[in-house]
Image (cartoon, rainbow, N blue to C red):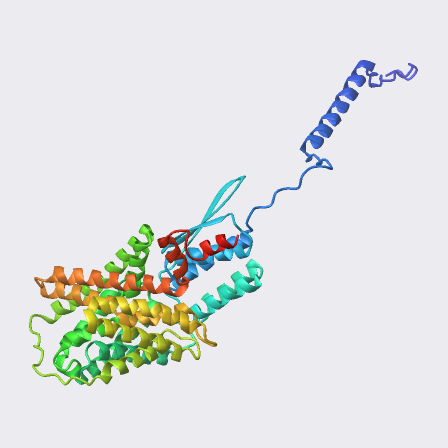
Amino acid sequence: MNPTEPEQHQPQHRRAPRPVSGRLYRATRRAAGSMDRWLRRVSAAPPEPPEDAPEPEEPPVSADLLDLLRHMGVALIASGETTNQVQRILDDLARRYDADEVHFFVLPTGIFVRVHDSRGTAVDLLETSVDTLRLDQIAALYKLIDEIKHKVPPPRQATLALARILDSPPPTAVWLMLLGNVVLTTGLGLMLNPTANALPGYIVIGLVVQLLIMIADRMPLISLGLPVLAGGAVTLLAFGFPHALGGGNPQQLLVPGVSTLLPGATLTNGSIELATGSMVAGASRTIYGLNKLFLLAFGVLIGLQLLGPNRSNPPDHMHQLGWWAPVLGVLLIGLGHSWRASAPPKSLPWLLVVLYAAFAAQRLGVQIGGGLLGSFLGGMVAVPAAYLVQRNRNAPPTQVAFLPAFWMLVPGGIGFAGVSQLVAESDANGLHVLVTTTLTVLAIALGVLVGSGLATKRPPQITPMVEQFLGPDTGRHSADRRKS
């Protein structure tokens, strides 16, 4: 390179000026994007209600009240009430809370609650359990119902109180429950077969059956087959050791041995529901009771087949106890049932009053017209006696005083004896036995219906009946017109 030549500078690359139209286009685009985002935010925001907008409507019945009514219905079914009586109690409780839009459909397996108003209809349900409440739980349940009727506490508070009742542990010790079933079995045995030779069998079999019941409460698999297991165990003990336990007549141990498993109350309630028009509830209860009855008879058949054809014949002469044995049996039934079912404190004397009243009416009916009349009179007297007992101070509720009376009437005992005879011995008169059993249950149910009517309805007034028969121009109506 020649140093004398002038230095040549490289040209520098400068950004060309942008046209005005491009800058205006990009600014317009940014403004449009901002406007679009603002419009999206405005459209997503909820509109503000006007000042005069009406408040949202509340449901006609609160969820807490529906929850209380559903659980109360389930508890009442577990206490042994019929579906018609459960519906009446629930209707009364709903009216206490000013809830007239609630309707109930009660079944032995569930409670349907229907709420209807101008906006539509809503239906809810709650399944029930086949377990029966203890006597102390039943007493606490009806005490809670009386408290709701008088004080009308908040529904949630009442529901929590009901949950505490249902979850309460048994107040009776295990050994006392075992002793209670032994005493109950012995008392029922003294009523049905008052023989001294059978007393050891009543004690042993009552203890074994209660142990099986306690095991079944902890093991669901055994609970499903408890009637068959208990029927077979009682048969093996009675016919396997006939002279040691039954005094040579093991047949007399069968019914008292499984008395705690007999579905007498279920069959009676089913008959009452069928008689009052509750066909679905009555049919389901009756089928359930008959199924349990046949399972017990099936257990007896299995026990007899395991023992074989060699059976001891009953002795010609048996030492019968005196007239006092059935009377003592009633006392033992009251003691045993109160211990086994955890009766409330100070309730035993009142339970015995109802038991002896039903026992006297049943014996009177048997002496006058036979077993069916005795069953009818026993059921008819038991209900008014329970209502009269309830009026006394410190007395248990009507349901608590009435439930032990089923042990006096023994509808399931007669039915079980007939079915076991039909299955085990192939008796030619088995149809007659089953018909007699059905009639006995119906007689007890009819007696309970009549007794309930006598206890809850006011007696008819004679004057209106006479005036209606003689005509409107007689009696008080005629005297009132003469004065005018």
